[in-house]
Length: 601
Image (cartoon, rainbow, N blue to C red; front, side, top):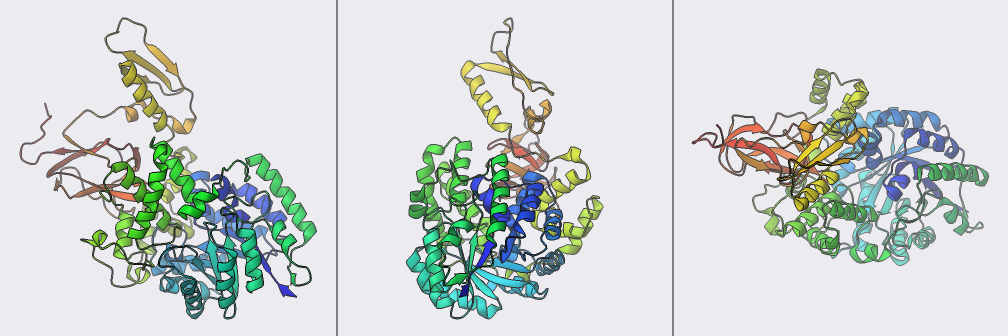
């Protein structure tokens, strides 16, 4: 009988894929204890989204989670999913960080690594694959399945064989959209499996995953990614139980213990009910997946972003623009971090009415070739003024480890070697977490939770001709005063909010005009420096031109340049570094270099 390897991905992404609600470490340890006796060929426990959510949402140290899981699993091999040379972050890493990372995960018990490049640029994986194999980690090279005028079955087969030549021990075909058909699976797998072991990872959003898995097994696939019910189907993967039931007992065997699987399922059900994590009520639209070829996670992110911008009615326009942007970018697969670039650009192009009038730093780096070679040709109009890179990113970037150590030690935030890696991959987000770790009173805010309420208040004040807003501190007490009605009793509203949403009155009051304002091009988080390891773009008192960059605004995990907009002298910044800002709000003020401060008294 042929043995089929069953890999469990529940701990890495099931909860996140279904409800964007990553599990806490305690829940993961509870599941790991039950999972370890089931007999999975590997447990995938770490990836970019889990690392990010540990820091940004759960305020937990991802390395401590990895250590705890490694202690808990005694039988099951542990696997991580890496974004190629980006490792677990959103930007390419230099060779020294890649090598230190490989040593660190090996020391924490990782024996398997699945590695993909977001552009399917196989050459981009050379440094990462070499560093992992130097630590005796078995490497599975992955290809991201997508459909476009430049992709074909032949191309996927050729790239899979190139992964073998690169030194990968196996290959995996990943379809996070759920558009792989059984016929396509049969053709690709049957040709590749003759040369190297093949695994499949197909999301259920398109409705074809279980049937495609069956076709893959018949065609020669040796491994399948699954998750345990009820954290399966919809935006997640097919369930382990369904796949086992579909296997012919006379032809195939697995290492799964049915009784242990029942106990693991029962434990998972308890946590899913407690945390409200399941596939019910997702409203998954299979037509949107198959027509627009957009992964469910990207689709839900677009819907959320448009709702926050009060532009949900323009979703269809944005979806059509996603396809146009993707074509302009050379038809890249829609997976992190490229999917964020395409989505953010499409939203801006539609809502601004001016295509590419604002381009993020990441998109410029993409056009330069920092992320690798795209599958197709980039629109030449986008390359105007862009100087392409001459070489591979991981070989061009200077070492970062020593500088990262100096910065963290200077700020009193360095505790262990892994902090260097967290800082290199996540920059300001890592620094915020380290400050919280050092003193829990420095808890980072969970997003800009207060601003939607303030926008509603602003609109209410405009309609009611209210001119005064007073805000308390402890219970968020708001006092509204109408124009010309000083003698009347002011309207008052008391709105209780959680501690994370409370801000000082001073931080909500707009600054007095002190010159020509430089407005934020979009809402997000403002940063004065290109990275935590570099000096600020500009300082007060500095002469600037219209094209001088004074900072960056981070939105949708992408950074957009803020330019002075005119010649003059930078007088002061209106907001602090790493603070939230609304679109159009002043970021800084200019004092005209010749006439001085035109608003000074």
